[in-house]
Length: 165
Image (cartoon, rainbow, N blue to C red; front, side, top):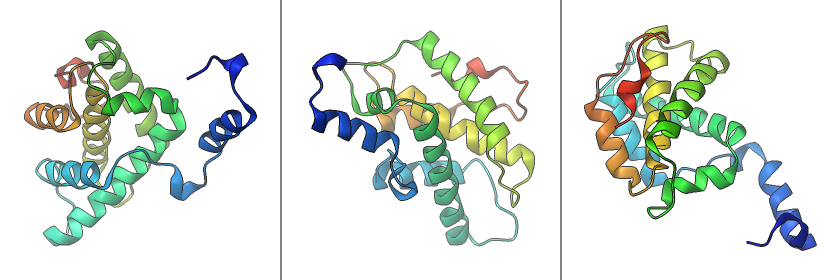
């Protein structure tokens, strides 16, 4: 990619188009990533009074909400690291981002149909999986497996370093 002062008009428009994308285009996760994460998250939380099929649909909507939040709060260039194995962030940066983004997301996202503890777990789980996938030499499925195996703290004050695999 050219430097900022070398961008063509079309490249600049594409950059602006990403930034000002319509709501239905403000996601970066693929269908497979979303459904995989919903299945894994379903093992961690329970949505009261809903069948398993209905629960997975709700979890997909939760993941899409968090994905949109990350689209709004991370540069797309960073978010694209999720699919890069040879480029990525280090463990310390992953830890810092998981902590900061989870706290911010928990303040900004309200899921009134979930108890607060379950809401926090869902937010933390999804953000930890995505941010860990942005680490160098780690694929999305591997990051999701590692996060699934970890104990997730049930409060915002808990030690968040446990979520960096």
